[in-house]
Image 1 (cartoon, rainbow, N blue to C red):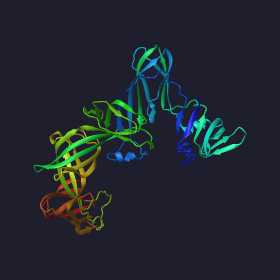
Image 2: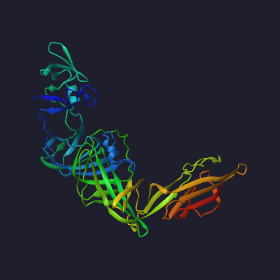
Image 3: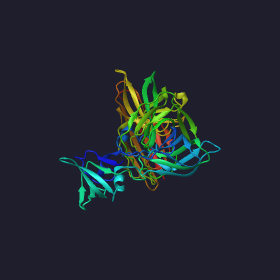
Length: 516
C-alpha cells in the first residue's frame, strides 16, 4: 500500500515552506501499518517524582495559556514492565515514552535475579514521521501531487525535485511543474527509519525464554509543580485567626500521559546541572479535577522534604491537575500589623551620605502585614513549600469571601515565621520629614532631626502601627534624643510601636548622630 499526505484547507491556505509545517499544513493518513514492535511489553506500573525549578509565585494557570511557555521543572519516572523474551539476542522497543525524555538518564534493570536478561545496547529514536520529513525523504523519487481544479482533482505525476516551499515536480515528458497549492501528495510507502512516536530501544541478551520483569527509569522535562495557599482571615473574640488551605498544582507537558501513577513531590532547592531549558510548544493544557483522600504524606528526605500521595494519580499529557496538599488547618493564630516605612531606603552605601537632601522624600503609604508562626501551638506546624498565598475575608452581609491581598513565601520549615504583605491601608496614612541637619566634617559627625506623623482616620477603631526607620546614612550611629521608645531590629533599622486612637494622630521625633 501507499501513503497519502492530505493538505488541510488546501483551497485557502498557501504553501509557505516555513519549518515545522506551514509548507505542508495537513494531516497524515497512513494506509500501510507500521512494523509490529517485537515482543511488546505489558502495561506499565509507573512511579513519578516531580521536581520544580520555578521561583515561588512565578507560575500560574494563566501562564500556561501561552503554548511557548517553558516548563521550569522535571520528573524522574520509574516504570515496571513485563517483557516476553526469546533465548539469545532480543530487540525490545518501548514507544509510550515522553517526547522530552533525557536519553542520557535512561536505565533498564531486570528484576529477575538469576537468569536475568543483560543489556547490550540502548538507544533513543526520535526521527518522527511528519509531512515535512516524509516529503524530504521522497526528493528524487516518484510522487503524485493532487491539485484542485475546476473539473475536480488533477493528479500531477513525476519526480519530486524540492520539498521546501512550493513543490517542484519533473513530469515524465521532462517538463517541470511548480505546485504552490495542493490538496494532497501520494507516496508509495513509509520510508525506512521513520517512526510515529519517540521510541526507546534495547538490545538484550537473555539466557532463557519467557516473561521477565524489568524496571525502566529516566528523567523527562516538561513537568513541574507549585503550591497555592488559601488563607481565610477572621477576627474572633478580639484575636486574629486564619483558616489555612493548601493545594498542589501539577503541570504535565512532557509528551506522555501517566495513568494511576504513584506520585511524589520534592520540595527544596535541588541542584541540577543542565543547559538552560528551551520553550516547548504544545497545545493549551486542560484542568483535571482533584482527587479525594487519602492525601499527601510528608517526611524529611535528605536536606529536602518529600510528599507522597497515598493514592494513584493520573496526569494526562497537556493537563494541569490540582491536589490538596494537606487538610485545611482551621483557626490558626495570626497577627495583623500596620507598618509605616516613610523613607523606604534599602541600599547600603560604602561611604557616609553627607548630602542633607538625600533620602528626604516621604512615602505616605502604611503597609498591611499578616504574620503567623508555623507551629503546632499556633494551629499549623507543617513544612510549607514555597508558593503564593492568597488571603480572603468573609463579608458578613452576604457570607461571601472577598480577596484582600496576596504575597509569596519561600520554603518555610516548622516553627518559623510566615510574613505576608497584603497591601496598603486606606484610612491610615503617614508623613516623614527632616527637621534639621548638621554636618561637621572636621569632627566626622553629622546629626539629623526626623519627624514622623501617622494619622488614623478610622472613626471607631484604634490601630497599632509600627514606624520603621532605616538609618541609611552610615553604619555607626546613636539616637541622642527621642519622643518614643524604640527597638533595634538590625544594624540600620529601628522600630517605634504606636497606639493610635480613632481620628487620632501620633508624632515621633528623634535625633540620630552618625560618626565615622
